[in-house]
Length: 449
Image 1 (cartoon, rainbow, N blue to C red):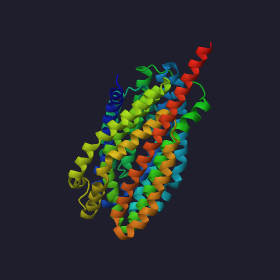
Image 2 (image 1 turned 90 degrees about the vertical axis):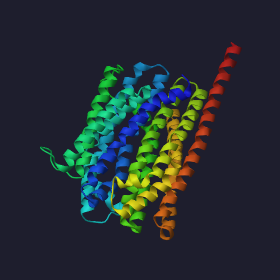
Image 3 (image 1 turned 60 degrees about the vertical axis):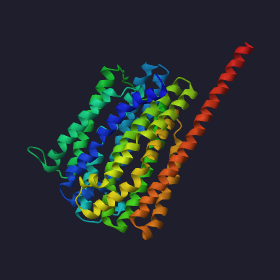
Image 4 (image 1 turned 30 degrees about the horizontal axis):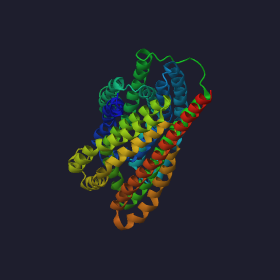
């Protein structure tokens, strides 16, 4: 199978899964928006917290995917069960850590600068419900990461479709208290998502055990392997968390300009989430294919596969950029009728969607880094470029308002994508050089023998 076909074989089901997953926040926003502007503000203010929560739940999953893809590339299928065992222990540790964050939910809204009152109360209730209910996300991410490592994602399409359907059905029932269901308001959106991910975790486990015959040993975890898994996944996840934390700072700058501009950015990101979930397909495709070639000890093919995935991903998102720029007002009108909020949200989309291919490029590059097992460059660049957004936005906001913040986001996105791409090129070249050196040494040994 050619590299583009291999990337697409892994990537197209994940593209479908990503598009379906984007229904989670859109469903929440649609139903909560009908409660009123206060409730919508509360939900949108938690968008960054939800982002960070997802990334925390993905730390172990990133590492598990890398380890499984390497095992599959080396045809050591019998070792996958031990990797999954360690990953599940990691999921338990992740949830324990998240549980410790529950008392600090008020600190998030304070840092974001949300105006006190009903919005803060509702936002904190929703955030606490999200943290408590993250158990399903912790386990489903690890189990899905194992499937991604195999390079077979078609079964995950059906699981994701069922999870999305559960969320679509549960959201209005729990938000509005239909029939025997309690009226939970905005927190009901978090509860619906939690139940859906728990169902998904059960289904992923069953597929791995029954269809892929993964035997999970009932033994204590390999602490060294668990540390390696976390070491691979942590830089990618922490880079994303840094990204979200910076958005919290940007949110504070936006609320100082106009309180509704934060809600506007949240609405714009609901649509931005659609192409972003598609880029996850190429992150996963690049990670899986590169990891399998690394496992097969072929760095040259790993490099070629990585660049192929990166080229495909950049081209694939152009239609999304064109569509959302052309129909930004109509899209925003689906979620809010407030003219001020809508105006800021549309301007956010006009700034960000023309460079959506850079977002795809960045995700594919990060996936290739994960496949190589060298992930610290992602964290280094994330810290440097993302934190630079705060002083730049703070300097531009007084003179240019929200447009100054939008410009900052776009300029730094382009810069960090180019830097990550350059660093990946160096990493690939280093791996190929090491491979050539080892081959030369092997030839010399054979000649001397």
